[in-house]
Image 1 (tube, chains in turn orange, red):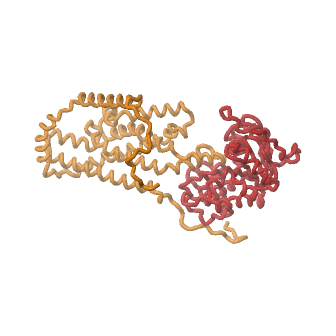
Image 2 (cartoon, each protein chain N blue to C red; image 1 turned 90 degrees about the horizontal axis):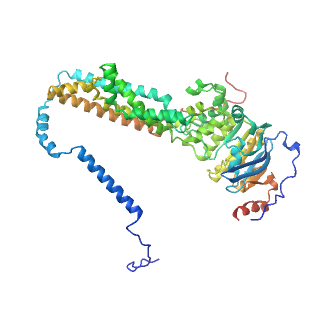
Image 3 (cartoon, rainbow over the protein chains, first blue to last red; image 1 turned 135 degrees about the horizontal axis):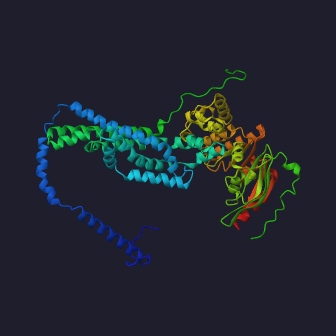
Length: 293
Length: 267
């Protein structure tokens, strides 16, 4: 067809009316969302005037933070390391607890539907309770200190990490697992040899991501007495010690950025297809009749 | 639709033909949701031969395959593999029987991140103690067996290459080496060349043919390329719309029969 002018009508399309059930539904959804957002803004008592009034105070505090007080910085660093330690141990603990539980909660590896639902429910409850909430409960029951922080991280993370890990395992390719089961290997062997190698990098990546998240979340646990730099942070605010506050915030920020960067780097490394180990060289044939005892 | 009179079926089989047969299928029937997929199919795979299962799409080839090792449970009929009635086995015995049957899939089903030799070693999992499996330290003799199987399909030099790095044809050969490593004398290959280019397809069929001719394996392979079937197979079993259409030597599968087989599918 030559590019003639399309000014004249050549085709007629079916008419579209505006008053369809589809459009009505869309309109109702839009109304509902607007209503919901409006109620949220009202309940949250959004008041920009308040923010504007408070700005000079924040500015004056910010000014008082400089120069930061770096005396006793080694103590601040030790507290920061304690936070990092709490997050790390909590993550490892959660991972260990997840190892036996996650296969029960994934559709393709669970032995039966009842167990599946039960473990998923447990994950849901643990995940739904924030780390800080667990910290409050455990400080009352177990006492102050970093171990309480570890417990708080572990309990919440069994739920969060568990859910993420099931989402890593479920989409795994069934093909190799089926193939190995057909050779007579039982479900445990088939899982270890066919499914695990497939999802292993994703498991490591998810765990690194959770670790990084936990470091950030753990910085505030000290505020309720569960150890780490949160306590130092709260003290400096209570005493209105702004130079000290600047140091503490600086150290927290530096630590979090460092861990985020490290975690992202390690995740890239782990997920890249180059990293699976292979042997160098090739096997050689011995000549006929020659054999090594 | 005109009815198909199977005039080319062998007459009543004598017991002699079935003794020592690798697979004997009797009156196998299967229906899915009321739709009949297999209708009293009876056929034989003699020992030590390369038999090809032919037929147009939807003729029941895949279902027949899956019924052979009870991946799918047949509704009626029996399957006997090397004298053992598969359809009557309990789960533990069924697992033991499956160890004796090598399977090759259309999609290869290799562990992609593992090397070729690690994939072949997977065939030895069933007889390897759990601690060895967890650490992936197989016995020396299993490694020697795996290398020998890789060598027999011409891939010994690629032993340490990751499976996902190999070409389609090479991956399928690794899968065949895995089936060899089970030391099973019966190999079932479900559309093994459907994902391969023509050259790799011929290569794979040659390997399967050699396994039958030189080592006495029994091989049942489903294909939809009739030319390749006629060239490589010793015997052909053809299904049409869930019923047996032909079961005889490949040489007896005339072009006329071939037209019949595929023409009815189009009507």
